[in-house]
Length: 343
Image 1: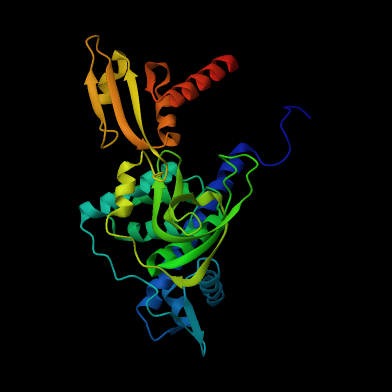
Image 2 (image 1 turned 120 degrees about the vertical axis):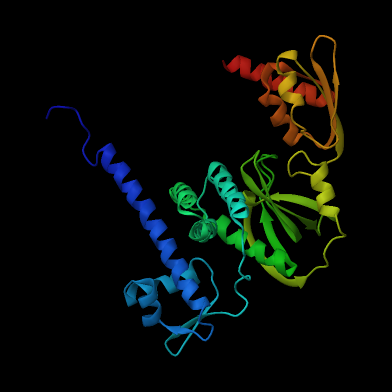
């Protein structure tokens, strides 16, 4: 029994199986898109045999795909007398893009692939549609992006909640949710909230999605991380939209997406070795930068709370010093001491 190799599939077999799984997912998305495109062109509905002929698959496969579109992905379909169709108003009007506009969406797809740690079928389907209209050279790169996304594990709860929130946001519907805040307050039990969805936002810093909205129980706008929402449902009540600009004003003040904390002035000193890197980017609209004679810079800005900016400060390592506020200085110093003790 030489060689000491473990039983089962080899690494090459595993890679081949993974590649095969990606191809299967992509082919399935392509079938879904072709079936929907055919049904969209036939608002009166179409028999399964006609859809199968257009897609180029068996009647049984297309019937299974139509059931998956309705049950798994949530596309509102109707079926009656052997005919299938799309519920009126289910899709937005066609989007006509120039090449430059389509490439801008391509960059969005690439950024999504970099930061998404879970597979979202709606994102995959959207990028598949985009690939259909791009020139072949660009489309090939986007298809590889779809493969990368499809290789990641799904998060069915997150996908379900995101769909409900998108509907609530569009229809101005109140949502009822259970939120787990224990990540920042260990031992704190989940709480119930009724929220008016004002905005869905993505954060590159935390690689997460957030809901910003009016929390009825708090009487103020609050930010909820979608990954911490345990359950969510649509309430029958609707809400009036906020005053124009109120949400954007909050985001403009925020370091990332958290805009519901008390505002504080943060003052930092960056070493001369990285002063050029710091000053070549505008990090916050309220920032002020003052050069010092030895080449370092003093940087200051007003931000809501220090949760998000603390991560940014720590990313600069020992080449930045927190001058104000004292609480933040102590927190960063304690983190560096703990790291030094660990190493």
